[in-house]
Length: 121
Image 1 (cartoon, rainbow, N blue to C red):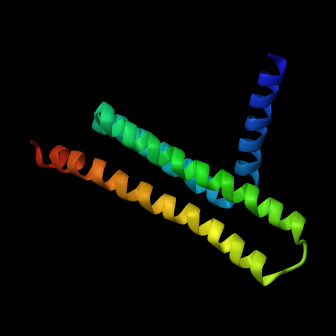
Image 2: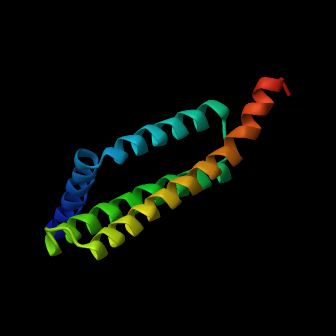
C-alpha cells in the first residue's frame, strides 16, 4: 500500500515539475480553467463534458510526455545535436496538435451554446 501511495506522490511531483518548468503549462492552466468556467456558465451537457474532459486531459498528457522527452534528450545529448532538435520539435508538435484539437472541440461545444444564450433562444 505504501508503494502505491509513493507512486501518487511521485506523480504529483511530476505535475509540479511541469507547472514550474514549462511556460506553456501556464497557458494550459488558463485554458483548462477557462473551459471549465465556460462549461459551467453555459450549462453544457454530460456528453459535452466528456468531450471537454478528454480534450483537456489529452493536452496535459501531451505536455507531460513532451516535458519528459525533452528532459531525457537533455541528459542523452547535453550539447546541441540536430537530430535531438528534430526530436524535440516533433515532441512539441504533439502538444500543439493536441491543443489545436482541444480548441476545435471547445469551439464546437461552446459556440452553439453561446449563440443560443446571446440570441435569446
